Length: 143
Ligand code: ZN
Image (cartoon, rainbow, N blue to C red; front, side):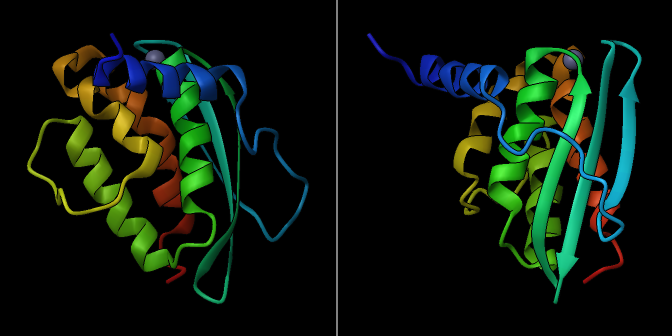
């Protein structure tokens, strides 16, 4: 039987094994933010390019657990093409969702909904958050 939980685990493992937009670029247009999560050994660098108030590029590189690395890949696929304003709004509510705080449930989170279950595991909240926090820092002030 295929439960929702299995489906979410599948999304996470697919992005962990076959990450999208992985690898940093040597391009001065990209803004780079690096965050570490000492409790788990996660180490993530996010690069973003913003053109005309839109996110036009997201790259990521790093090492860590499956939750952390896969969430960077998911983030990159979702955010490219969004306005900076929409991207920040979604990031804020994603961070609330994984931290088990009230969030805007009308948002179409696409594959990022797979991390909803993280809120049951407080030790993993940071794993699911750092790529998104780095992303938000990298595009802040560019709207
Ligand atoms: Zn982790």
